Image (cartoon, rainbow, N blue to C red):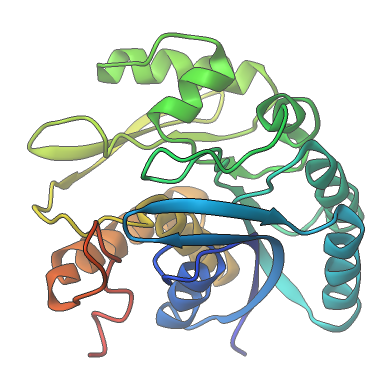
Length: 265
């Protein structure tokens, strides 16, 4: 059977990030995508001009209806937007603790615009670690969670991964795509094993939604039954292919979307 994967995230109307990118990724990786919307955004490839948070009670209603009817094989969490929504999502996931959860702790858009109101980072650190199979912060998010300077080396990234593990996350993958170099290097730590996942850096300006896509791809592979290391490897290969084909798309005047369906089109 085709596994069902749930995205809990915000709406990017340009289609490059958020639940639209997640559901494209799920479909490309042979999963059925469902979504609970946490926020509406007015944005395009050049920036964000407005954010409208969905009331936490309505997020809870969406999740209650989905879990009551659909057998969910994996969950990907993206933008939550408020501490209240973090609490609501945690309460829902606690009822379904056997389902793998990939958390991409979105605090800002790739343009730098804030996507969080209040102390969302603090709420995530306090509530979500025990419910999360894997957390996938970028460098800025990881440094903020660890109250540490921005890491500039692999060794520094590994140290912050250890700190986040000590904060309660079972497994940590810090994505290093923002660091210049010939390769895009992500570092992993699960309390026992340090590992670096590397891929050749793809030269393209169309990188909008890379973090969303990676975390969604990991969730999709977990839904198919892959182990965590294999899921990360396969997801990283998928993202590399989506970046390599991204220039076939012409979406907006800023950094455009990855080509999620590069295997098929």
